[in-house]
Length: 258
Image 1 (cartoon, rainbow, N blue to C red):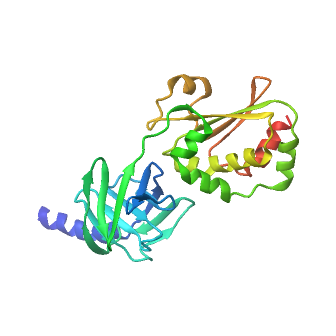
Image 2: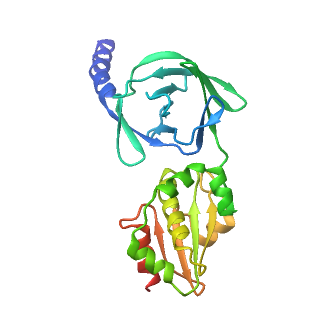
Image 3: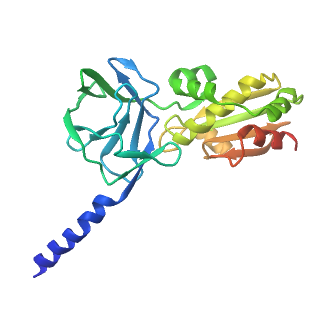
């Protein structure tokens, strides 16, 4: 009787589990290469709830690919199996089914497989930790350059920032594995580039996965990321943490007017 009740319960729950909405969040710490060449427009996603799967979106491949980490299976999905969710997320109804296309192997720390005559590899990049020059950040994460160049700064706040005559220092706390950082840091980079104001300088401090390093800077500036911490006359006048409700340039103007 107990076995019957358990079996009946599982059969009732199974459709609900299969139909649940799963959110997948971009995982910027992974670099995807196609035929040995890094593809900076390609994106990897992981479920926000812990599940052993990954999604890959590669422009030249056209359809999403599902990696099942427990079996190393690669599955081709239909273009409609995954839909756009919140910014930098996608959603699916359950773990989507598709057409199996083979298995991946692990070679020198990379996930490698063949798909329609193309060699695809997926590798986790080391996170930038500690203070780094801007050039190092852009070399490590070239997609920041693409996103910086795509951002359009509002003219009125930019004119104010460009003409600002007092010394300002901005401490940028970021993590190269953080999707929100990837979304907002390039916007600040574009603002500073377009303003080209010698009175405004920036420090870029990378945070390790897990958020425990660099200890000295985390103790000094706090554990928020992404965070833009603005200093005037050596004193903090405000900080923007996470996703702003106004544009970053408007937020900066409000701080600079203090």
